[in-house]
Image 1 (cartoon, protein in one colour):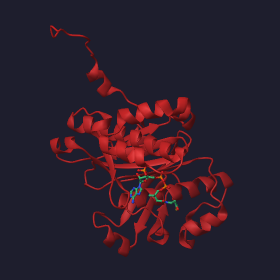
Image 2 (cartoon, rainbow, N blue to C red; image 1 turned 30 degrees about the vertical axis):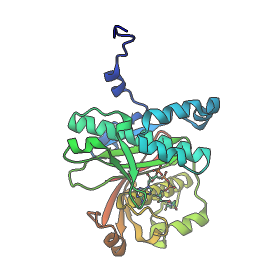
Image 3 (cartoon, rainbow, N blue to C red; image 1 turned 180 degrees about the horizontal axis):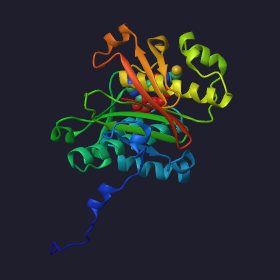
Image 4 (cartoon, protein in one colour; image 1 turned 90 degrees about the vertical axis):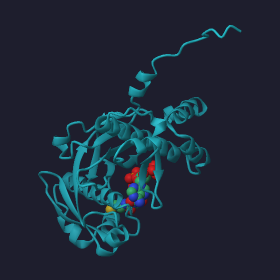
Length: 276
Ligand SMILES: CC(C)(COP(=O)(O)OP(=O)(O)OC[C@H]1O[C@@H](n2cnc3c(N)ncnc32)[C@H](O)[C@@H]1OP(=O)(O)O)[C@@H](O)C(=O)NCCC(=O)NCCS
């Protein structure tokens, strides 16, 4: 063999720029969230697409975006097909949000598989990988999914705290008995009583606000309902203020403040809560 060139594959620099998730909430001012946050939404890969042709697309997608360790988690993951799909969509959204944040802030181009999204011991996602040693501070990241949609927010904030996001479909109706369980009396008083559509929307905003706060704390809200409490809401701006009980704040020492502000709004048929 003369060692001649058999085939040349080009365009890898372009591949680095391709986005599997779409940039989302680009008009930060309108949603009253910091400019430094990068938000992404994945709605291109519904369950029927991922499961088509005996999961062929899904397997290609997973092999393209996941790191070696994530692939091992993915391959050993128990749970229903739709749960696995949600997890994969969430990973794609988070990787793209982190990728955009690192590109914008540090001018560093990464492939999705470079960015490992690993849970801490409470389940909070953390952005990891060799690239973190090349930059001064790693962006915080948060993930939420509902049905066939996943979203993620990533970025580094001036005060150095984390981020949290939650979404619910606007048409979701939370049954009254669940409202009674999820919110204490003081919180329920703050839910507008009428008209019915506004009341339903604010129940979802409160729900997302508490979940987004639980994610920024790193606790989630399972078993903690009373520890994360809605204190104030502004109907016009959608701003919600949430307080964190002393014992929960003590347990999660990274938490910088005991009052968390959550921006709540509607976008793309979703009610959204973002805390930062
Ligand atoms: C885990 C929890 C944080 C959110 O769960 P959820 O609503 O079922 O799911 P979401 O799609 O909103 O969020 C899931 C993501 O939250 C993230 N997450 C999980 N635990 C977390 C923690 N301790 N801190 C921060 N983020 C966390 C993960 O990234 C997860 O996605 P992944 O598994 O694909 O990585 C938790 O709050 C929960 O289970 N809540 C139950 C729902 C409830 O009772 N809500 C009452 C509202 S008042």
